[in-house]
Length: 155
Image (cartoon, rainbow, N blue to C red; front, side):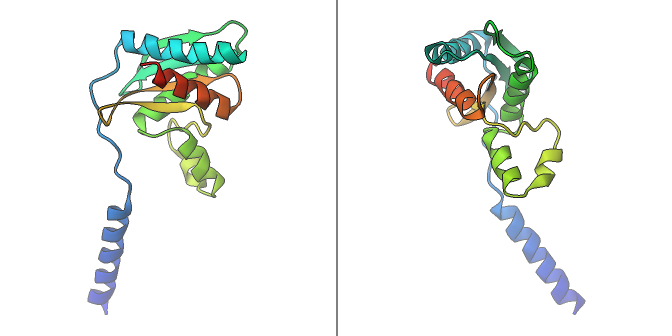
């Protein structure tokens, strides 16, 4: 009986491990020139829409490479933009993914360090590898994400 139970547990663990999604590898970190291009794309999109935001670009380890805050952006957005960028880079996924999991009842996700469960943080991908993250804060999560996407499209 113990052998069968051990086999079932082992099989369950193996299935669970293989069912986990594969996160992309890390690549060479985004540099200042690349970070400035991304931020410029974010700011252009936000100016076009009349939105005031903060934008942060971090390297593939979550360290700040470039930051910009538009005039009259809410004070809280400074730290939120950096947090979104770090979460996107270090967890190698859009911050929207955290909000989706938590909204489906995955409350344990909210306890992970550095989680920002709000859209607007995206990993920077080059040749299928994460080279950093961009985070935007200042308007709604969907609008923040729209600006982040525009920034990534500017490179």
